[in-house]
Amino acid sequence: MKKQIIHKAGLFALLFGAMATMNSCSKELPAAEADPNPSALVAVHNFALLVPSNLTVMLNNANLSVLGAPASIAYGGSLSGPYAGVKPGATTVGLRTLTGTADLVSKSATLVASSATSVFAYDTLTPAGTIKAIALNNNMTAPAAGTANLRFLNLSPTSAVLSAVLTRTADGFGVATTGSTTFGNVAYVGSTTPNEATLSNFTNIPVGTYTLALVSGTTPVATTTLTIREGKAYSLVARGYAAGRPGTTTAQALGATLILHNP
Image 1 (cartoon, helix red, strand yellow):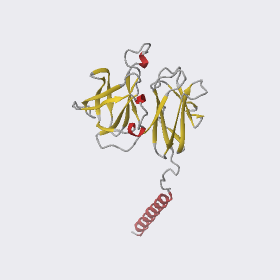
Image 2 (tube, rainbow, N blue to C red; image 1 turned 90 degrees about the vertical axis):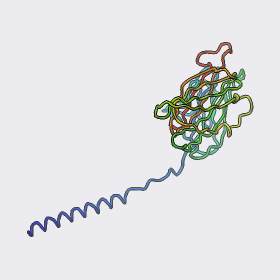
Image 3 (cartoon, rainbow, N blue to C red; image 1 turned 135 degrees about the vertical axis):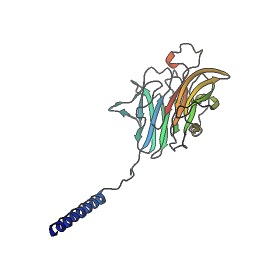
Image 4 (tube, rainbow, N blue to C red; image 1 turned 30 degrees about the vertical axis):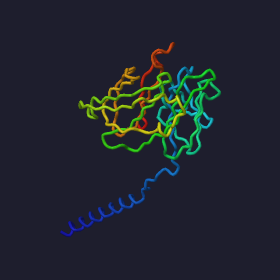
């Protein structure tokens, strides 16, 4: 009996020691801390027409590198990532051709820490070698459950005014449903001086599958299917030339691109 009591006492001592050691170790783990120097995030999207090559990106007059190579963005494309982190404050984004030594466009903005900004290159390359750009704020505030945020940008220089009609055919679970959202009579961004604050605004819509029709007047001029996911923020971009422009390639014909801002 005495031997049994000694064994129990020893077992309790070992357990107590192990618990004390675990508590001691847990107290030594460092607490998670917020980034003391958060970056500002910049994305770049290329919808500039008739530019003879991909666009390279200059950040404050230095080449932006992605995976060790200068960033190169094809027409209709975006930075991989999709963001580059930069020091908050005054920032200049320049865009030039692969072999160019001068910017086709230069966009300056004051970027706030932890903010997300998208620079959209657009319009047709002029004889003077210039294009246009806008810088929009991407509000990453999470939308309500079952919804997403979307904005419509008309970057088609020959379309004048377009409506984007989104007809919902299925919900987020793939169940057939109905409903629609329309962005009506949206002018080409370059027709006047763009109001970037207004263009930055999103519209909250239900998630699911949509059929998109770009409509000029009452005539559908392009259609496609979109999948809108819960909690996401998107830009829906009309880009390319409307039908009737001589010399338009298939790649630069009127169409739509859906850009996801928070993968």
